[in-house]
Length: 159
Length: 132
Image (cartoon, rainbow over the protein chains, first blue to last red):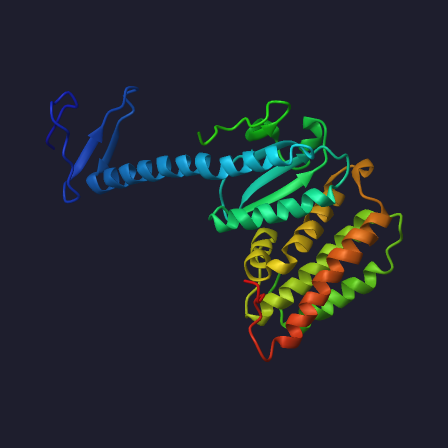
């Protein structure tokens, strides 16, 4: 196998017809993989970065904006991990101590709007005050808090 | 939920509706739950018209949003309120009057009449919401 040090001046060229490559990260936990796998890893990395960017700039931004708009009724908003699947789960904690019918209509409309942006979500309102009460639905420790608890939007803004 | 025919889903919806009428006011949580599952059967009847069925609550909601947006708000409210009724503590439940007024009187009534109108038109036209 040909060895090319990462200290070489020019970029290391990998062609999809190539053989194997050995990638040595800082922790010395080496990867031995075919060039095609290396290419897939690169493509996945680019796709992952793109997804994250869109996730922040589109979905989180829309959710934040919506929560701010309905701040008189919304206490906080969470996305439990893992995020993804057929529909992204979103929990909206209401200020109302019981089910808020007005907010329910707004949530249904938000789901429709997010569908239109290719972010299918299952958004549920819950009336809860303490993290212990959240646990019937999701674990706040393993969730991304998008909004609330007096901090407004806690997710990164589009700007 | 197993894939059923339109008639099978309608029969189950009616079955649930009859049970709903017997639930005492002291069980608003079960009233909300049965109301939702009545709506589920009605929506599945719509899906069966197209030869499909839903494999989860999430996909069913999405089917409603995309194909029958005129009942998306009502269906979402029935779903969410029934979920809260099952998992929230009793002090957070809506009472029987609210269930009757909002969930039965508005949401389930609208879903029922919408589905009935779609069924009536099924043989002559498309089953999607014309607003789509």
